Length: 215
Ligand SMILES: O=P(O)(O)OC[C@H]1O[C@H](OP(=O)(O)OP(=O)(O)O)[C@H](O)[C@@H]1O
Ligand SMILES: O=C(O)c1cc(=O)[nH]c(=O)[nH]1
Image 1 (spheres, rainbow, N blue to C red):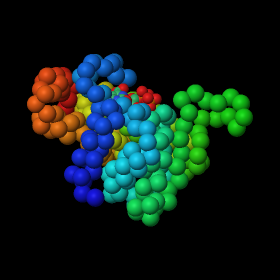
Image 2 (cartoon, protein in one colour):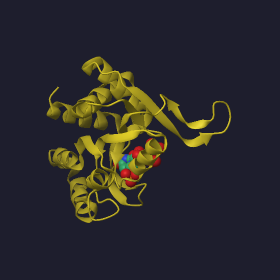
Image 3 (spheres, helix red, strand yellow):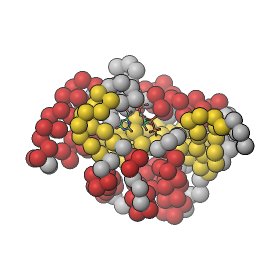
């Protein structure tokens, strides 16, 4: 699959499932955004298979030396699973898969992690990076368990400022030393919007938001 096919498939799937919406949304960072990507609405086997292929293609250059995938709760959990299946079936790489809980479990097996114990070089698989808070949390968790986070693959890089003047992705790359790759970026969404005349109002709001928070 070509990179452009993967981007088109991802955007087409997101529109079809209503995962990409235009309106007014308050983000985890507190920013008020004219668009929102909700990976929580991908809800069929076919959708997960397509997502898995898109993520596996994006992750492919980062496979050397990799031991495992980490899917942060909640939406990272099915995404890491789908990517793990696609990496096994399409690239013949059988990686360990680990997830976390948002709230530690205090009965039964207890703890915060599910799946494989965290060891070796780990690739984080998540839906979106805005300000980078969620990725920092995952990096801390992986390091606290003695493993080595080496990269991040996300569906959408919103290309926004992190906590400083750099983009959140640049901050993750420079301050945390991780490689970050995404299936699509905000620029791909803007390009798609430019081809939808009926969504011209959303395009203008996207451009205004990019002026405010983009890098
Ligand atoms: O880069 P950031 O500013 O941290 O924002 C992006 C994060 O925000 C959302 O997490 P949330 O905790 O809402 O995830 P969930 O719906 O998967 O539980 C999203 O799933 C990303 O992980
Ligand atoms: O920054 C966020 O909270 C966020 C943005 C987005 O597009 N999608 C999402 O699930 N969270």
